[in-house]
Amino acid sequence: MAHFARIENGIVGQVIVVNNETLGDLEFPASEAVGQEFIASLGLGGQWLQTSYNANFRGKYAGSGDTYDSELDEFVAPPMAEIVAPTTPE
Image 1: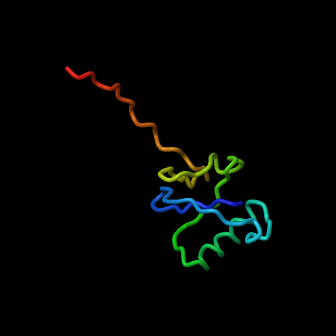
Image 2: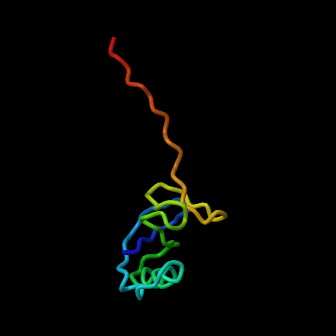
């Protein structure tokens, strides 16, 4: 299965799965253009980039809320939120 991330303003909005047979069993990067055409044929607009579940390309598997760095051609996780220790009731 191939995974494609929808990018809006540099942020991953969602990730969908496309069957390898739909991609002609091509490997990345050749599979990306075929997948993008298929996604467009479904009426799903926007920029779709292939992501690797095993992080074989583009740095990491894209998750919702990640950013896409076009200069590095990589997905980047958002910075971890500060962890605040729970307060004890007085």
